Amino acid sequence: MTAPLSEYQVIQACQTLFGSEVDVGSGFLSYLQPEGLKSAYRKKAKETHPDLFTFHDPRVQKRQSELFRVVNEAYDIMRSYCERRDRAGVRTRACVRTAPTRSPHRAGSATKSFRVAEAGWLYRGVVPEHRHEIGRYLYYRGSIPYHVLLKALVWQMRQRPALGIIARRWGWLDDNHIHRILGFRGMPRLFGQRALHLGLLSSYQARILLAYQRTLQKKLGQYFVDRGYLLRDEVEQLAADLNQHNARFPYAAVADWRPS
Image (cartoon, rainbow, N blue to C red; front, side, top):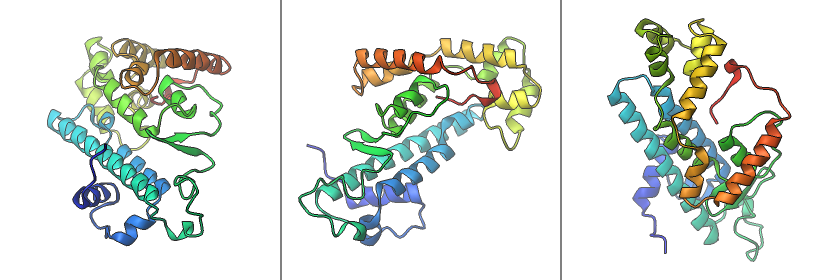
């Protein structure tokens, strides 16, 4: 049986996701909807993602990794709270007219684009018509929730050296180049895209760096298999489906690439 959540845990989790200035009372908690919770989580996850601090001081990297972990734990706590609240029949004003015999997830939970599952909210819309990496494809196929994808990406990211370290080792960038890239403000935000924008790497070099970096990390699908989100056969079938999907689209320019 899952351990009950304390009031302190819920308040701390809310303030982590929505800010310490939020008045976390019974009114706020009873009106809180999964869509609003997910939106707050995604905003915080983007702000604290360790990928944004790859070339910072190790102490900064450690701090950001801890903040990202806290944000994910806060989201897990609040998802659990909302699910228990709904099962217990605590409804927002928009759901008062719902018959009590209906599924607790139908009112204020299921939407046109998402459905609820034990692991979290699963996408159920149309897969966007462009190339995908395996992680994002699994999300768009409704196989994994978004917060699990984020955890998998962090797990994978921690196994690989940064692009700047590889490029410096190969003599393609020096310390001055790396400082220029890291000091660049505005878009694009990813290291390789910044290097392209500043003319410090060619498109060919960026492709080679990305391809080599990926050889140094474990396959993302292994994360979902090891943690029981998917069976190995399911991952293999979805990977085959992804290959068929991607075959319909040309490769994107490096400047347009996004992490999976």
